[in-house]
Image (cartoon, rainbow, N blue to C red; front, side, top):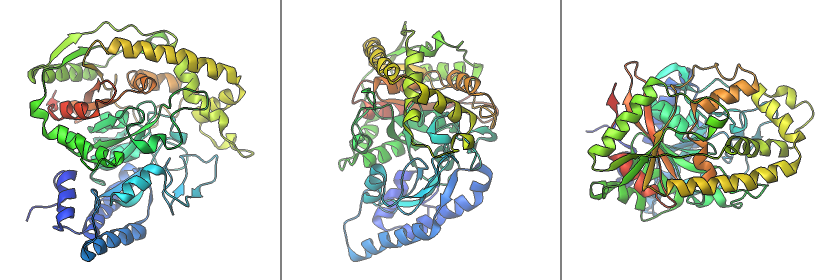
Length: 460
């Protein structure tokens, strides 16, 4: 008999749906994987095996009773420790605030639980989700399964490491400046950042921040394949028709696309941006694969407004100034979170409003330039994943600069509100993964997933 846990998440979902494997058997398998792999990789910060078994048993009881089954019936998931999961502590990666046990699920957690999933626990994040690496002062760092001396990325690094290491079949993440795409790229996965509002739970409390700018953060899937990413994305949207999965199934019918490629970054007005040889090779491999699939891949001369870096940094840190901190909290923070919180708290709110106005103009200009092509191709990351501890040990400004130089192509997509996907295209001789990013117009998530399904990583 074929091992139901050796294949795709879609195959597991289908096996669970037809009763070839029970939800309890599935939960036990992945709990066993967590027990084996998590001590080395630091993916999970909370595991509630008892609750997971009880939920799995409830799923099996539904089947026995002949009740309707959700589209993710019995599929094990976990959530970033930035999201509330009823009955589990939410620590936010910080010692500044006391952990609180959530009384109810966050909207996305509730959506996926209603779809029949089984929750195993919570995964590692950087403090307040700020960083492109998942390290903090309260739990072990999330390490890259491809090389545990390196970062799993952030802020969905714990989730990405869990999927890459086989502790989860797929995982939902959130992306406010690259936080799905960065760890996906680091760990050799597909990472989809949907457009703002494509996942209804993301805008349950509105689609604007405190200063009137469209929210940066959205929820997206992390998966080994585009097919599995589409499966989870459709469930996150509550799409009973599974339109994205259908688009991947029809990927062979895609028309030739006009794709503009560029290595320009809007952070170049602040910092020197240089591509590592592995990033250049991954970009070249991506171009070749897209051309082999019949697309036209053309050089694009994008020019980014120099106001971008200041505007993004101002708004990205502005929420820190709104946190109600207890006495002594600053002293319990890591350097980056502490220093940026001090600056955000002291900042005149009008500067945040001005940044929102200026960044709106910058975003419109980027959307206009990108619209000259069907899709835009950039490197996923400019450098290999950094060594664990190499960024968190720096002063705040050096840490931030190093993050921007590592991930110079991700946050600009959040600013525009458009969808994007990162795809592994290269495996280095050392076994690390590098890839490319494709940016699409509004509503193109299905197209991005379909195109991603046609690309396969090459060996360097």
